[in-house]
Amino acid sequence: MTVNGKPVQFDIDPQTPLLWALRDAANLTGTKYGCGVGDCGACMVIVDGEALRSCLITIAEAEGRFVTTIEGLARDRSHPVQQAMVAEQAIQCGFCTPGIVMAAAALLQRNAAPSEEDIEAAIQNLCRCGVYPRLTRAIQRAGRVALRQETISAAPAPGISAEDAERAVPAMRADKGA
Image 1: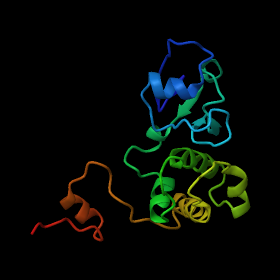
Image 2 (image 1 turned 135 degrees about the vertical axis):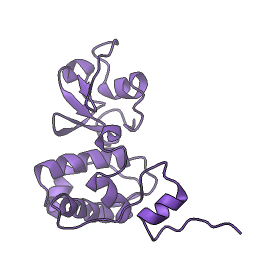
Image 3 (image 1 turned 90 degrees about the vertical axis):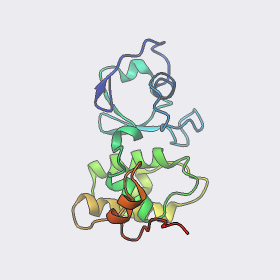
């Protein structure tokens, strides 16, 4: 299979859930284990353009397919869904966030202007923190960003110096010390 644009071969039992191959064998730990039975969506990945719960698909079923995990979506946090989730404060504890981001990214690939009903039907992920109203706003905003109708002044990429972050996002001020 191809994972995040790179061909991979797992030398483990073909009936192993894709979730465990990704987390344990490939060290792609952004895909979370939640319930293990497909109810929560924390383990959501995109397989051939479709959001799937990786706890329910085996390595054998993923053979020859293209898999995208949260790590492969945009390492620099530049994907519109990632930017909008931050901008709309739709992240609380963060545990369910990777699965929700992947489900939202797959939705927006099919429909960049989803209604609230479209979002409710497509995003079946469970969030204990209850960010659903902000989540809906974030997904709709990400769609507008994808359609180039709006831009987001998002947080800078990880690993940036405080001074560079201040230049990139003027609202972020570097601590000048005492």
